[in-house]
Length: 172
Length: 281
Figure 1 (cartoon, rainbow over the protein chains, first blue to last red):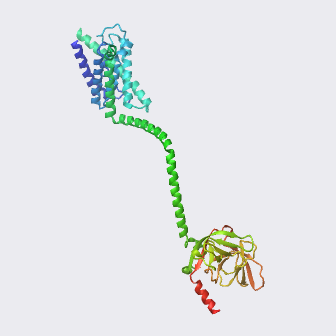
Figure 2 (cartoon, helix red, strand yellow; figure 1 turned 60 degrees about the vertical axis):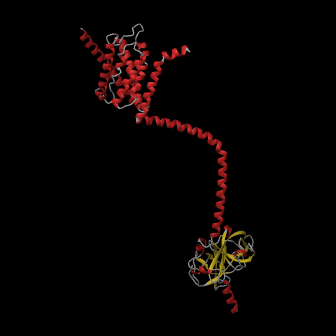
Figure 3 (spheres, each protein chain N blue to C red; figure 1 turned 135 degrees about the vertical axis):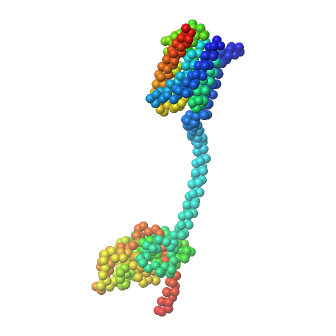
């Protein structure tokens, strides 16, 4: 239990560093920016306390905002996603699974992929619409949402596969 | 009550989420100039729209008052306009009206004063034509004063009351005036044959006088009118009574059909000249 929390906070910090130092400097084809820090919310155990999820999501977004100098945008998007995490999980995972179940590629691949796609799409839609804040350049905003989501989903799935393999490698 | 508390406790994470989201959006609007500008512009649009609606409604109720104010203002302006008009009429004396009637010599103007007057009655249906002007002895008008219009000679004052004066115009058979062609010194007599209000005759002009149609006829020696005042323009050669003199038909410079404003000439030296000439006789 304690180890699990430690891993989570370690992941929390590593994701922030990764997002701020590396990923936010990528601007693929001028439209696609991978946004990976939402991976932290994906990997929380299913039955985790809602307060914990929401507040940690808010903190995550706020810290990203502080680094990227975009006060409130990431925090708002991430907090909304965190608040709706439980209903989204209920949508994709069957209810029988126990509270400490962690979604992942090697636990429930199909459900995890759908879950990831949906969550990332929701998160980036919120994020980019808060950023542009108008329907003026709608086509450009939608293009950015779709391409960024695509890149982010691919990276998250790859990262998850990698982490799991590494973990199993250590364990064995 | 317990159910209510239970409900609140069970859903308190939503409350927290809403608070945090609100705080995030507060940060978005407070710290990002772009989002703030967009937000403020739309907010201003909404506010402006609501103000416009309120204004439309309230202005309807103020219509009556505004109408009243406009009427008052209108009356005030009308009053001012009439006052100014009256003042302008008073000052309309010695300006452009005279300049057009004179041809060249302006040095004699010192001798002459002009009293502006309006034609209040005019008759040119029969041979005994006359004009009535709205200035009389109260304004300094006396019999034997000349009357001119903007275009040229009109006539001579014959009778005067306190506020009105009668004028015998050029188009009256009793009227006589000496006139001459512009580019010569010989003079003749201008009279009216009683036929056409627009035309008068210049007779008793020596036969050798060369003339052209279109020549200007000016006043010559006269106790009444200044020299060089336009009477009319030569239109054609008329029938002469004897062979030594020519008679011309003149188109009168003054249009009696539309005569409105005239000037009465007050000659400062009239009495002196008259007294001297009568003493000699």
